[in-house]
Image (tube, rainbow, N blue to C red; front, top):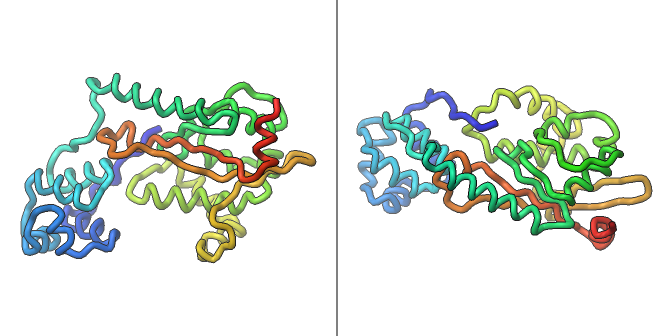
Length: 267
């Protein structure tokens, strides 16, 4: 399921100013990078001047905005979105999706997932199927196409086998909120609220992530007498020009110790 843009409640001036400030950029820095005068940028942010389409794109590039945010800025300025997918690009999009799926196979025997919008599982490799089988307590051939929120919220043996469930849930929420602050996914509102309402998760969300002793959050599973630990590496496309591929991610689950590596390598 794809993300949709937020309603254009904020004006172009408000959105431009908010994007610039969120990045900690001054008007002078942004103007120089975009090739406009600081005075003109000041007029744009105060609503005293209207931008041309080229200026919107130049400012978007100067701020390093995602194509989704660039579309939002274009809409707010009264222009049609530039980075919407078209039928003519379907073949190229399919090529990108197949190339990203190939990363899953290259990561065998360790788990890897192809995610859309950061939460929807499109595909998993054999290593992921092995992990899912152990978590569920029954063999499966393929990782189900579902979303990560439902996986985290589902009670039962799978949740119990993730020893640091609350830590993993807090990590998922932080990532989701950071990546999708300006996107609207009403279908996830209830799930996000349910995770955030958990007392342990709430406490972790309110704590300073930098105060943790470990450099990364590990996923720690226990299957009877076996314990495995994995950390997550996420790969995304550089400079996407189409909203259909902008939010594709490959999530690599990497063994954090020799015992985990041996467990996945075992037949």
